[in-house]
Image (cartoon, rainbow, N blue to C red):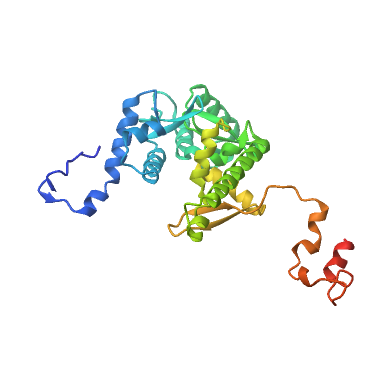
Length: 320
């Protein structure tokens, strides 16, 4: 049953005083509002931008939580239309005895319950207790009716999972933004990595050159950026033809952290931030000479006991 919309202007609802807590706790109202918008859109569907315009009071986290709940409950489905993800009302997508026989209904319900992650044919066979030849015929029949579809998993090239026809496969099946037609997009990742690093470099340089900020601590903190800021920059460049998420960019930034080019921290608000730490320059053999990073280089001299002739680190370096 849809939630009833109520006004709080009078200070009470149905004679019950409205407290601050009751105003803040309205997950069902938000869920119903989003569902009504998606229903009203018909076959066109609703994009994230549409939801932001129509539900400006919802934060990003609240909007994502509401959409995920509706997808999990099979109330809506996710579709990709011209590189844009749109949500459409699912309604009651079920087969009736008039559309299928009992065995088809059993198989269909197993596939429907698997959601966006789909289900392997072996699991369907075990749970339905059907023979493989008979099960294959049923799957072909359901595919012909466009009730289900077969999707290849990037985890195993020969593994095919089945899910409802209108569902958008989970990223664990398709590989998300890093895969295209089952192929790993290493070049695309390299481009994103370079652009993300350049953004952090530019942000650090701009912050350090800002003479209007006198506090060294404030200036240092302003050299950091969150993943959503980097995502905003990447989106504006137009280098990505697929829809990237904050988690996608976080994984790219973590690659830079592992390479030693970026450092990350958790700020006082609990958000993860990233900062450029090294120059993206290829090192040659001479840059690895121990003298370049020796903490006592100023005392190294032929006149002193400490010199390059008896330096243990120099001996180890020359014998590599």
